[in-house]
Image 1: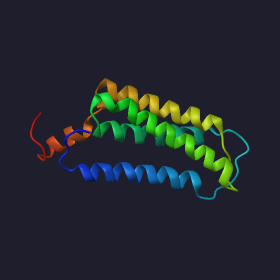
Image 2: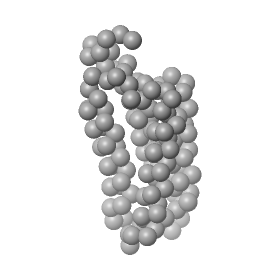
Image 3: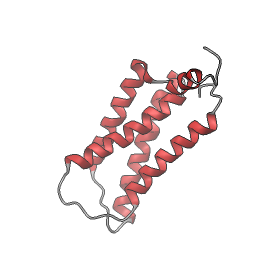
Image 4: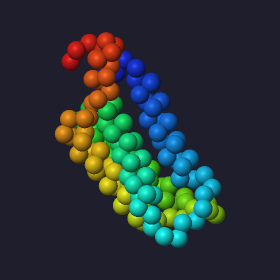
Length: 130
């Protein structure tokens, strides 16, 4: 993890994003019989945001770990939806959408957006210049 002054705040943000994904995935909802482009976009955006948030707090060599963690969250939620909910269904295309969002976020992190939390802290004068 980057040496962040407000490390607890950044971790809390990651946990809130994760909790929103879990709640959005497991709260009762209608069964959707058709594949919705909007639904897949929501999946890609949610997992992309989570991955970008995580890579914002991590050193570059840990970006892949963040991506794997985000993907495993999505995989486990798909299993739970299929096995333990009455109003949700497991959809392999959701995993594809999740993976797409994760891949885009990972690419953006490697292209320069990763480590953004440290830069935000420096912009606000919370951390010394690197």
